[in-house]
Length: 243
Image (tube, rainbow, N blue to C red):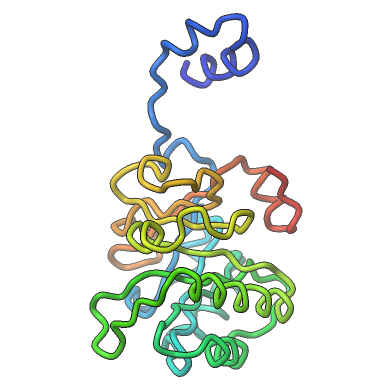
């Protein structure tokens, strides 16, 4: 019923402006989205990727690297097994603010294979309040500049523009209004992203829970939704998404 009302208002909103504006549309829930995936790291332990595939998971991001010298000990295992099971997968890099961007670029290239079938790499940008080795929080201008260097070089090397992952506090502190036109993956477990991220209505992926359950993964796992339809997702996989 809700979809029917939305469709009516999108087509005839000008003629029935009062009625449509008076209708209180609820925020979409994760279940309203057609395409869902997961992201994993060493903390998920051994994963049965065949079961993950059969559960309907459409994509997976796998932690690969952090900073300029750390590699997730399960990256290679997950990278190979996910592909073998037929799960579209990509790698993600956790950015470390106490290491030059050039060194982090070199490290990602050393660890993450060039695979034309992989989904785009992710640049994971968030404050790490629990770090014992780096409490640095650079200014916005430097962060944005270094991010552009990373994105450009990763696109040149891997052939696909990376996705940017952001947490609520990092986006609020450094990303509002920045990097328009890039693909954002937003963490928002308490509410829909539009309610908590300023000037970021063009997000592409939504991480909506850290307590998801998926066959083949023991315990909790992050769940994520693609913003659009299945056909739009297929276009995104081919690098042909238009919004």
